[in-house]
Amino acid sequence: MRGWWREIAGLVLPVACGGCGRPRTEVCEDCRAALCGALPRRVRPTPEPAGLPVVHAAAAYENAVRAVLLAHKERGALPLSRVLGRALAGAVRAGTGQMDGPGPLLLVPVPSARRAVAARGHDPARRIALAAAGELRRGGMPARVVTVLRQRRPVADQSGLGARQRRANLAGALEVVAGGERLLAAERVVLVDDLLTTGATLTEAARAVDAAGGRGGSLSGVRQAAVVAASPSAFEINRNRR
Image 1 (spheres, one colour):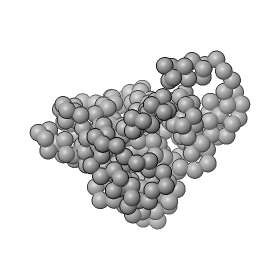
Image 2: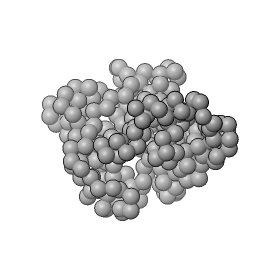
Image 3: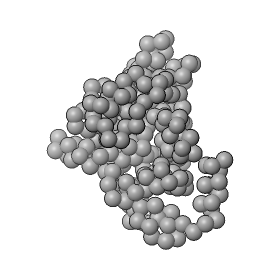
Image 4: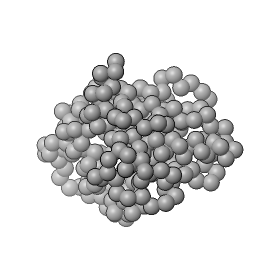
């Protein structure tokens, strides 16, 4: 009900840009360009955790991009999922150009903790993934979202934790739901999330999907992931490695 009310309120109440606060627009042209105007590129955190798939991001997590993501995630500005989904779709395209195969592209969102979903009234990564899948289909790329990952145990709040602490906090925390390995028995599986900082979350998600393959599925290992934004340092490291 909370999410439904926010959707209705967004249609009838005055709006301001989620990035800069400019009135009477959900996202102004400048902030939209910050999210979607540049070519997505591969990003790498430092240190790069073992098992992290190849990750592409649409933008650096700073300034207007950071503001839009936080407005969507923490302040319930749900209509922003459209522009965030467009940015995520661009990152998915950048990483899947060589991923040929039958069937649609499967986007697997990283799940939020249940208590976080309850507090926010929505699951940000899932909502953005659904918007991205729609954007991809409109562009001629068959895509759908499969929400097969879940938390198998509680985890601590990640804010304030360093890279090593985040890896320890998330180790073994995710799993594929029973029967989910059948849905994932495809060559074109992409993990998606809103943000990459240390890479611990996507690494754990990839481990969980790969483990599901060991339960009898035919998975060959997740090799691609996409996010809306990555920490500025991840972009700088990538630039220096070119």
